[in-house]
Structures are given as C-alpha cells and as structure tokens.
Length: 330
Image (tube, rainbow, N blue to C red; front, side, top):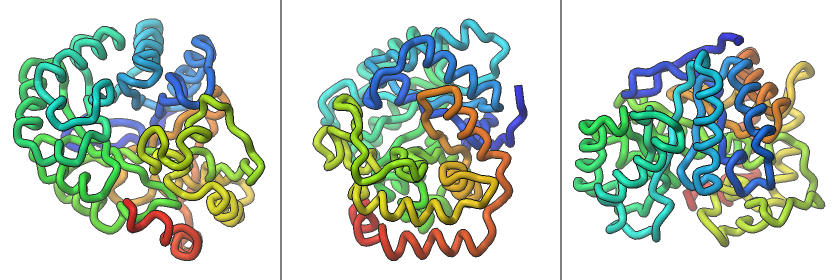
C-alpha cells in the first residue's frame, strides 16, 4: 500500500487520508456498478493510500455499507476509517430525529458494516431545525456513551447549518460541498471549523463530474443517474447535482477550468488539489466507479501545490461564471 498524507479528522482525534473515497456511486444513483467491480474500486483506493471511506445507510438501501463491510472483512490489514450517515430513511421532519430512530439506524449500519462501534456517524442533511435542537445532540451524545458510535458529525447543505453545528461541543466533523464551483464555505465555515477543532470533509469535489472536463452540452446520462433525474432538484437538494450549477453553464465553465491544469496533471486532479490545499480541509471524498478512477483521484495527493496565479484564476472563474447562480442560494 502507498502512503498518503494524513490529517486529524477534527474531534475524532483519528488520522485520515487527505483524499478519501465517497461511495455513493457504489450504492445507487450513478448507474449500475456490479458487486465485484465495487470491491475492485475499494481495493484500488486502499492500495493507493486511501484510509477514509464515506458512505450512508441509504446508498443503495445499505448496499454501499454492506460492500464496505465485506471488503474490510476480507482485508483485515486495511486500516480504514469509515464514516456513515443517517436520517434519510424517513420523512424529512424534525420530529423523526429522535433517539429510538437513531438507535435503530445505527444498529442497521453496524450490521451492514460488520462492526460493534461505528467510527463516525453524520446526520445526513436533515431539516435545518434539527441543527438547533438540544434533544438531537443529547441523543447523539447518548449513542457515544452507549458505544454504538465513537463520534458524530453532520453533513450539511448550507453554510448557516454548518456554523450552527460547529458551535456544538460534540460535533467532530462537518461534511459540506466544496469545489472550484462552490467557494462560499471558504468565507466563514472553514475558519470557524479550524478555530473549533472541527474536521471538514469536502464532498461533491468534482461537481458531479463537471470538473473532470469530460462532458459536453450533448452528454446524456443514464435514466437512473441523478445527473438526469435531479438536475433541477426534483428528487433531493439541487446542490448535490453539479453543485447546483446549470449544466450548460457548468460545461462552459469546466472547459475554462480545464485550461488551468498543468501539462502533467488533469482537470480532475487539479480540482482535488485545489480543495486539499484550502486551509481547514481535512479530507476530500471523490467517488469512483472504476479502479482507474479511484487511483487517479488518489494521485491528487501527490500533486504539487497550485501556484498563486492558478488560485487567482479559479476565483476569477467563479466570480464571472458561477457566483451569481449558487452563492446566494447556499
């Protein structure tokens, strides 16, 4: 296995790789991935130095968790920190975020993953009111005391939700959309998290693939791919698909971004490198549907820091092309 830079994931006190693996693709909503192909992706990531997997109990109705559990049982030498998420298995009402449900969801995830104690459980983009509920965070503390979970965090849609969660003393980490097309978290969220000792997990790092530079306005995605059925937020928050950027606008901006990649890099690795070097980021979690993609994403950890001129160009591109679409909304 290769070694990769490790950073402390906030209040968990645990080290994780700066490039992790998001496993939404291995569960559902990105087209079909066969079980053996999924295991190959997990193995390629670990062999490339990844020590952090992110999943959720609703990815494929638990399939993603089960695949990770199977892989880790077959690879006991793999030292992987697994973060999962809970809360999307019920109607999105604040009254459903209660201790009895938390216990049931945790027990299901523990069975899927084959562990007694979950490394990290994140509230999965719950209703905004949940972040202000003392009862919710008391329940999360109870799960830690019962050793169902070792630590808890949140996955958020907005910067305001992130700041509310960071103020909670037990919040170990915040997962938030961050990429060259989503810069708003740089303003307040990352500085506040760093000051509080809260880890930052950057998700949707390639804007659902836009920042790979591979798509054109004529690209067609499968019917069961969220890039088809959630393009305008029809199924869940629009920000989870192309970071909320209009597809045609995103394709044009992505072509401009691709020109910023150096001759020895790629647009995708440049985007991941940009995230890695933002102060306060712990880990970035690109997904992969093939072993080659997993290896290519992990290679971003070996990229040299982007020069100041490139960082300025990213900001300029965002301000000209993207800001008006997404900044106020999230």
